[in-house]
Image (tube, rainbow, N blue to C red):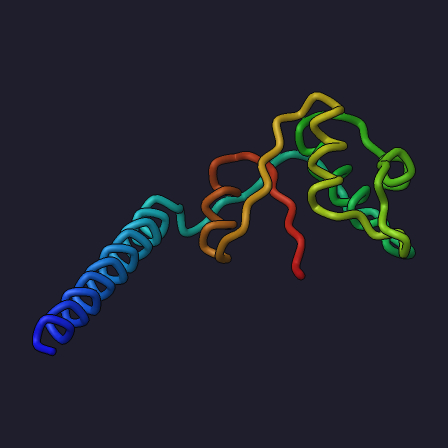
Length: 132
């Protein structure tokens, strides 16, 4: 009986240590992002936001990013060229990444906090996001 209690205490202790380590890593990463991200950052490239009538946000947001990289891009034209659209006309993040990679761009699909988004923008690389 004592050995079972001793074993369960060891398991609980190990689980606690694992959770503490993961929490420490998470807090350290967020502290690094907080300290390394400037309080203000301005994207200085000339750009504009198109009017989007329906579910074409994948094309329009991609056009905005591509224009910030110096490419002349039209949102509706990009949207029409994206394959693998959902039945309702929306485009999954994975399909958009595949489309932009086919155009020769290095694309990274991430998830994170608003602070992490600000950190990525402060690096000077254009960022677009989806909210689910």
